[in-house]
Length: 594
Image 1 (cartoon, rainbow, N blue to C red):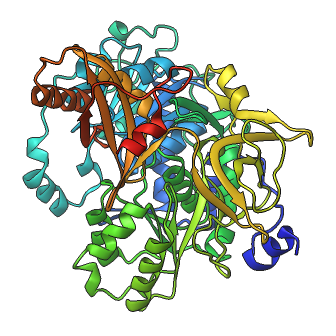
Image 2 (image 1 turned 180 degrees about the vertical axis):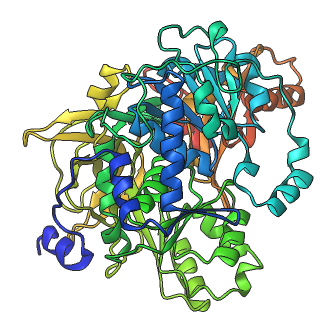
C-alpha cells in the first residue's frame, strides 16, 4: 500500500494547498475582519477582542515608525507570553522590522551577544528583568528599550494582587532617554511628542515619548494610522528564531511571513476542525520558540481562535489554566503532560471540554502517551495525545499524528506540501522503508537560512537530484510501510530540559572558562519529570583543588551566564575524559559512564 494513499485517507491532510500572497500582519487583518468581536487573547482574566488587538497593533506600528524605526531594522522581543509580545510581533511585521525572538530569562552576557549579532536596535523587555540588563545595554547599539509590565493588561483588582505578591519586589531602575514605558508608547497624546531619529540615531541626541519635542512632519516616513502600504513582501525575512542548528551549535534561523503562514493556514486540518473560530488554545509554549510562536499564537490569530496566554512555563500554570479557562486545545511538551497528571486539582476535574491535545518539542514515550490517554479517558475526555515532529529550521511542525489514526511511538504523517524522507547519514541516498537513517524535510516552511552563516546554511540545506532543497535535520529515524515517521534519536547534540533546548557546547565553553578547569564534557541524562537534565563531567587542572568549592563555583557561574535549564544538575569530577580515535571527547562513552 502506498504511503501517500494512507496519508490522504487516514490523515485528512490535503496533499497540497494554495497560500495567499500576504504577510503575517495582512493575514491577521483578514482574521480580524472575519471575527472582529471574538476574543483574540486572554491574559490572566483580561480578554482582548480581535478588533481591539488590531487597534493596539496599529498604534504600536505607528509609534515605532514615528520614533524612526523602519524596514530592515531588527527589534528584540525578550518577553514571556503576554499581550505585549503579540502586539509587538504583528506591529513589527506591519512596518517591515525583523522580530528577534529571545528567551525572557536570557542572561545579560548572552543577550548582549544576541543583540550585537542580530544588529538589533530596539528591545522589548519586562520591567522585572530590566535591572540585570541596564549595564549591558550601554555597551550595545540598542536605540530604544520598551519597558513592559504585567499589570499593563490586568484588571484593577488583579493589579492590586500582583503588586502585593510580586510587583513590590521589582527593582526600580533609573531610566535614560532611550527607555520608555509600554503604556506611554500607546498613548494617543504621545504621538505628537515623538521625534523621528532616522537622520540622527545617536543615543545621546534622542528625543522620545515624554520629552518636549515635536514630531518631524515627514509624510514619506510616517503614515497615518488609517492608511496601510505594504513595506515588506511575504518572502522577505520577518523573524529570527534561535536554534541549535542541525549540528547542535547555536544558530539564528531566518524565517519569512510565508514560512509561518503555511502552517497557520493548515491549522484547521491539524486540529481536525474546519471552522475553529471562537474556540480557545492554551498558549503556554513560549513565543521565542517556533512551536509556541507559530502554532500557539500565529495559527490562533489567523483562524479566529483565542490564545490564552500563559506567562509562566510550568505544569502548575497549565493546571490552573485548565481549571479556570477550560481551553479547547493544548499543545505541550512531555514534562507538562506529566505535571498535569500529578496535579491534585486537575485530578478532580472533568476534562471533557478538551478537543485536542498535541505534544512536541521532545520525545513522547509510548508509555507516557498511554498513561495520559488513559488519564484523559478517566476524566471524561475523548481526545488522545497526538505527537508531532518538527524543527526550527522548518518553523516547527512537519508531521503530526492524524486524528483518525493516532499511533504511539510515531511522529505521524507529513503535512500538506511537506515531504519527508530517510537518507543514509551524510548522503542524499534514500534508504529502504523500515531502515534507519537521517530525517530530511522539504517544503514551503524551509528556512531562508542561518543569519550571516552561509557555510552552516549549505551544511543544513542540500539541493537533491529532484531539484528540491532538503533540510538534513541531524535527527535519526525511519519511515514504516504506512508512511508514518518514527523519531529515534538526535544526531546533533541538543539536550531538551523540560522541552527547552540546551546546547552542550555552550555549557562546556562556560565551564571551561573557569580557572582551574582542564576539560569538560556535558550530556543529557534521563529524568522522571523533566525528561532530561544536564550532567557535566569535569577534569580539574590540579588535584589539590577542593571539589565541593569547585562544584559550587561551576553552578554559580552557569547561573550567571546561561538559562537555568542549562545549569548542570549533576557534576561528576574525573581524572580524565574518554577520547575518540581522532582525539575528540567521546560523548557516547560519557553517556555509558553515567
